[in-house]
Length: 311
Image (cartoon, rainbow, N blue to C red):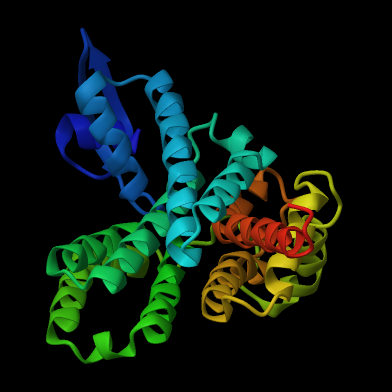
């Protein structure tokens, strides 16, 4: 509905009272919503091109899922400089059951996962090419990627680590600071939004974030990757293989940090358990680094077999 209001009236708000007569949508009472506005903005673009419909939202999320698979391939190729690493990462990301399920809904998490991956792609391309126009793309994607969910801000820490490990001299370049200032300027509305909803309970009868929730959420969300129910245990074992080998320490540190941040933040959230209602969808934002590490595991096994003459 927020997307519909953006498309029809150019106002980022939920419609508390309105009408749709003879195809003309008009809201007479707008209501501020607690959720970030990047996803409604994306949907509003679809609505403006193809018209407003629920089906457009479902088809759009399937399109987003397709782009996420390609993004996983790009990251696997760019991180490990292996075409096969990209293919394996994309296949694992594609075949995670919850990814397939939630791609056929209108939830925000598929888009949040995609844009976190896209900003990493842009960052890697910039660090390899050192071109100003790529830095511009990176800065714009960074500001946009942080506005899908509240925890999307954590991607800033991941890209900071990316720059630190790949080329610390970029942090001395005036162009870097100029475009980071641009990204900060673009993120100001989101910061204001977060400040405006800082008192929202989000449905909690107590504190939204607390150490009280940690142990239960840790147990549930850890077993999620080991129970062989929602996530194939084979993928988790491949992730372990990818981490175990000595190669690609820099890349593994970045991916492990990315995974732990987007998995770990929900351990302190009152509704952060993957078995709390439909909140298993929160796991989607950690799947891309998970798939990349598992894809790396297949590459390492492939190398091992070839070294022993079994390839």
